[in-house]
Length: 329
Image (cartoon, rainbow, N blue to C red):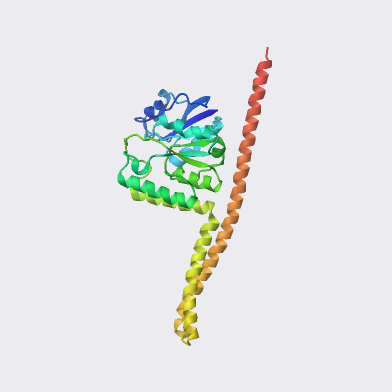
């Protein structure tokens, strides 16, 4: 069984060596452990440090593509390299590489698809009270919306099985953490949390400039992805709400009309009719979006099967190559 630890990083020449050195050389149940560094267009010596620190594979983006895109590039490369388990860890040395065995053990035992590291919430001594509060509250909202037992939804320290990685398609540009959970929930994957430790913060986050920006990007990403994978629920809720609100002014008009004073309250009838019409349009949009959602599922299923076929063909090619080498005198 092969594990590849991928490290997306941007200008991390001061932290990357510590991250790589903390990755265990051996883990029970694994035959091979390799390190993949995704250099996201760094302008410092990140690539050189990765090579000197012993990274087995290095990918360099020609420009800064962002964390989500770099994460997806890394996942595709890990699959191409034959990883059975993929662990993602940040290049800023926030997470402790010594805890990687805690993440991969449930996957080795076949007890999950995605394992997310829980940084401890309010018990984490390295986070400010505001950050801990946002982490706990945000994870609570995501847990309720997706029906997942995840204590730290935005933790980037996570392990992914090969089968799960083949089915995850990151399309957002901000961060992969929330989108992965939305997709995994929609595809009925088994997601678990394990407690992990963190190191003291060495720098401010480069993913966002301020807390309000982080909240805005996180909320919009969650709503966009949730609508993408649960369109019927979203649009039927909005459409149903518009219809219910529209009924109220119509009832008000009918009440006055029965009393013979309907002429002076036509505004209520117009408002109610407009809201109910809007609600019906939203319901129709929901039906169309749900049909599109089914088409997307079929497309993803085809892509998944194509990847499995390519994987089997590559195995056959390697097997034939080994047989031909053995037949040579």
